[in-house]
Image: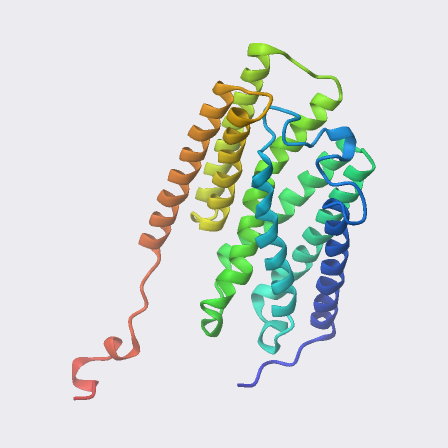
Length: 284
């Protein structure tokens, strides 16, 4: 199959995505402690699993493995001849590169202890990922890539968005606590409950805006449940926070499934070529 000839802009986009991925890998090596302190120990431990009521338990961060593998696979995938000029890649490629660069920058600024700068960076990253997944939602993959594309692109960036939504809540909370905002007892629990309700609202809004993307919902539910696990197994313990996190996860999961079901119901089913032909015109 012949494909349209890539333009100079297409090639520049592909190279930019690749360089951004390399930068992201370097930032990751810093974040996991290979080239610097780990995220848990950087910024004076403000981002550790036991630093705040909204910090997910340690195992939650295993979600970064499929996200990073997905980003690497996407970088290779976008070099395929068919993807060089694909409408989806032309629309999300630059944003994908931005998300990778922001990911690395976030890790670097937390190494420097600049927590409020990290809040700004993760906020921009969140907005970038919303933009990417919104484009994916409105631009279907080509028929030839019908099963690979959703896994490498929709799955990767959907999971990325869902996790960063939870991470943003944890990041803002960590910055506030590090700045000296340390309410105690019921006040702290109430603040955590309000943030979790906001996270549930954000997850519900994303579900309806993006047609119930499973990867987004699953990553959000994952993060919320690990917040609940952290508040029952680690310090600081808070039953109220744990219960609210579980309820928030249930709300996000139900909203995602409901929105997906509604999207599939409204999606017209294209009849097979033979079924669309008049009875008299079909082969015997």
